[in-house]
Each structure stands twice: as structure tokens, then as C-alpha cells.
Length: 165
Image 1: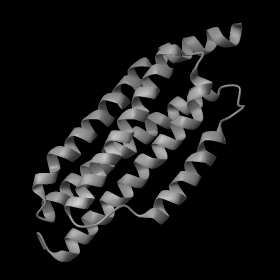
Image 2 (image 1 turned 180 degrees about the vertical axis):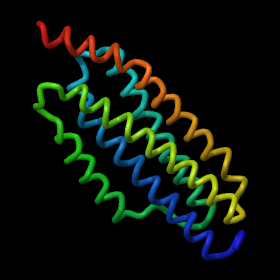
Image 3 (image 1 turned 60 degrees about the horizontal axis):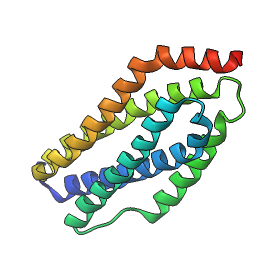
């Protein structure tokens, strides 16, 4: 099955799906960013994350173009709407920032796994030259997930300080 047309189609669908995921990530962060201003380090890191997701989406665009296809406009519209709703899911909750951080950690695990799948699909589809691009994005997601996880106690303390004001 290595390199077959069917395998390539699965891989290209995966690239489109991941592009939609990155679009959702950008929208979610945009919706939450202003509410993170009381947490300057988190705010700055999330702003950087939004820029990184934009670059990751551009990388996926380039891979899709290289293979003679493009992102799915329909998927982009649906995931954009989902990001808008997701951004408001915890809005107004007393512990919104903590819930958003926990959701972000879970989302990072999903993105890391998605890139691992894409790397395997690229190899199976005969597009092994794509793996370095996918590995770069996966590494960035791992770094952000690790950063969020390692700073979780700090965020809890900062939240408690904000709440005490």
C-alpha cells in the first residue's frame, strides 16, 4: 500500500484536517487573548502561540500546494465557527483562565498526536520529504504543551492572586 493513490488521499485529507485545526487554534486564542491580559507571561506566550499556529497553517498550505491541492474552505468555515463558540465556552466562568489552560494542554496533546499521524501517513504515501516540515510543527506544539504543563502551578497561584484583589 506504500505510496498508493489511496494512501496519498488519506495523507492529503489529514493535511487539510490539520490546517483546519490550526485555524481553530488561531481563532480560539484570538477570542481568549484579551481575557488573559491579567496574566502577562501567559498573554505573551499565547500571542506567540497564535503567530506560531499561523506559520504552521502556512506550512500546511505549502505542503498541500506542493501536492497539487489546497485546504478545504468548508472545513475552515466550520472550524472557525467552532473556535468562536469554544472561545466563549468558559467565558464569564470564575475560573475561566484555569479552564482555558487545561483545555489548551489537552488541545496540544491532540495536535502533537495529529502531527505524529501525519508523519506516518507522509512516509506511507511516499512523501517522506514532507516529514521535516511536520516534525518542526510537532516540536513547536510539544514545546508549548510542555511550557503550559510546567507553568500550571504558577498559573494557579496567579489566578488566586487575581481573585484575592
